[in-house]
Image 1 (cartoon, rainbow, N blue to C red):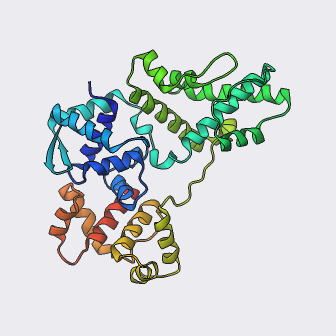
Image 2: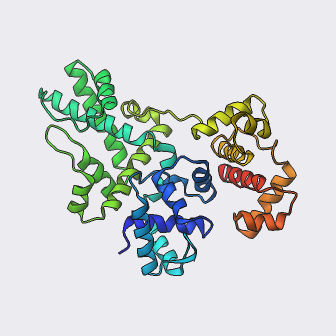
Image 3: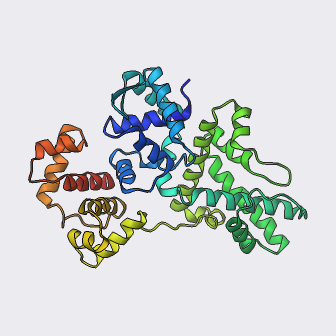
Length: 351
């Protein structure tokens, strides 16, 4: 059986189709906030996996690739670049069939808020559970200062209110858990700590259910992300759970791109911004592509005309490729790589 981490790497390699190196996969899964990583994620439709394995190392990545090569799931096309074989495609397809929860994951959208939401919720439930039973001595599920402080400030002082909130949380969680797969719901319940239950770690859950730890990690992440989507879609249905979800999503770009964006909003040109920031024009172009990806209201017409946009889109769809070099060869010198990247990124945002 192929380990889950290797399957994730294989999936991204399949999406990349030899256009990016294995370290592009590594940076995506680790969550490197660079323009290149973000653009690659959008371009090859795998940004939802951004940052879902923050502890991933290069050594682990290399080991997974060696394993995938040994079973002939991938073939090296050049140094650090691989394409997925027919066997590899079958593994990818089987993985998606066995993991219907897979596309509930949205690391790009929820990476900054998912675990904060979870620890707030689990600590709050733990405190309510113990305090309703009038037990004040227990070891909190997390010692993270910001989480502890938030729970202290939000926690009800009245015993009746504590009982009510515990009951409300139970009802809201139950209404969500009955909608999802039994194993996903079971993992969430087993991870909760209260006066009568100590929550299990992912390692303990993997042993208990005889599953790969990576599989448990994915199941749990997908379940939390799916819950956050539910809360966003139906906030009135989850008034208690909504309290734990802090939406801090504005324009989610790198700090350097944010500085470029502020100058663009002042009417500065690419050349002017490059001079002001003492950066290469190519770097400013990278920032603009990143902005176009993240902000649907950002117009690209100043950089690529409507006729050129249509030409690039039609060629990409006709040739069924997003390979920049292939598109550039056919489009000629009148259209730049920057313009092609900009249109392809905007196609993904609008599709």
